[in-house]
Image 1 (cartoon, rainbow, N blue to C red):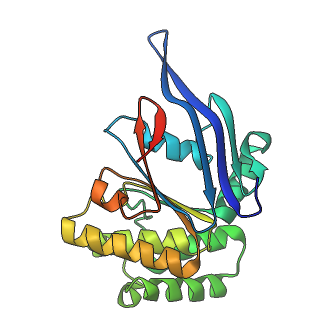
Image 2: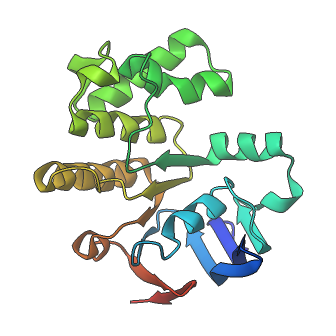
Length: 227
């Protein structure tokens, strides 16, 4: 594994048991992500894109195979260790923002820093700066219910990048937005990832969006093919 390697998947399988039959969702996935790589994965609904991202992000255990995150073998870590590795190295963006509704935009974005043990004042200051970078400086104290769909997703992007992770995993990050807002969020993600020198892995149904990435894979019958 090279020093620039952020994530490596080796022969990853994920299987489910349905009515006493085993269903293979992922079948021997191999994937290497180096620093500053941008990678898109497309595939039909139900093809396993979300399962793949959850497995790579340590949210699911593979049935077989190994995932290495910044050199650490996830299968060798405790649940707490995996949580720490995620907090230190990964940012997550989902189709639905998953902001905590009872907290303000500022508090939501500061949350990963507070979990890391950073002081409240520093976390709020850094969150404010990050929200300014996504054009939400005028919405710091607004709760998610007071934000538009695009503003909520901007806050979710800010939260994912606040810890300066090595890799951002995004699962259909613009799938719930109108085309104009989706384009704005896509552009914002590319700008911030380039500015922060991060790697980005996106699962999307939008082929035009995927074609803007350095690498574009299609997930079919549990296997990745490079387009």
